[in-house]
Image (cartoon, rainbow, N blue to C red; front, side, top):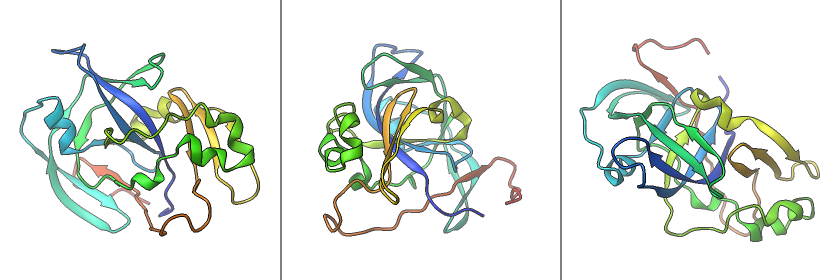
Length: 199
């Protein structure tokens, strides 16, 4: 079982395809290729007025396996921060265990602290205090994870990747000692049939 995290944060707008296609909400999204399905916080459902009954599922993370329930929603699109790219989202499952550490969100200022990232710093959106971390996109939307270009630096330094929806930074971009360290690990498997997958 792999337990090291591999998420990256991006700023998107989520847009419903049906009912209110003109209604959009800016939010931060975690890209996590260790999750087999995509998740949304309860706040996402409330923002868009999504009703419906909760269905059972099994959530497997680094901290163990939990039987839980959550609503499902589909027919949403994510829009890149510049509005140029739109991707149809897979079915989202309600889950409030999505990591919520805003210190992990890269900023232009933090990227500028690294000489090898200065060239992409202007392409990282400024931190938006009003935008919440509401979605985690897993491997069921693999196109969101596809790397088009990469900007590497020294060994153990953060690196930047250009994805279809914009630039992300992977790794700790804050200067050493700038904030208290925290540990975030989040491997997720959603088990629709109640059986554990082979790992």
